[in-house]
Length: 118
Image (cartoon, rainbow, N blue to C red; front, side):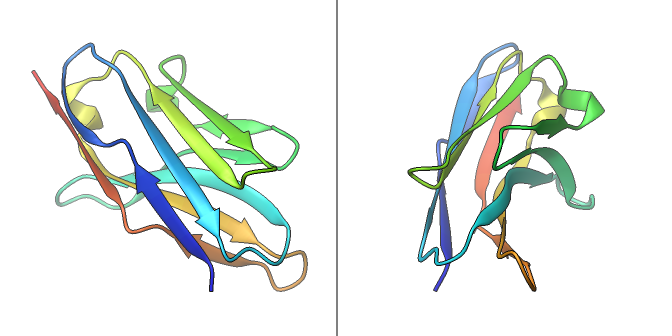
């Protein structure tokens, strides 16, 4: 079955950087989108960034200019480079993938904690 495994979360000071990585396995169809969501305590889960199979990227307004998403189609991986981190970026970050050309399904990773201290 499809599995998404994240790595790279942790604790960083405000202004610092972290890089999140996600590897997808069990893939038998085309991955249309890969991306990252985040959920802070008491808040809804929101899209951070996503990237299509041809490299078109979309970002939440709050992270534009600070975060960069990249993808390796051959390895089925997606990375999120996070720079100039702020305390409000603290959240659990979830890797996602939309897989399949017909009846596409959304898959989630287990999440990785990112904590930014002030």
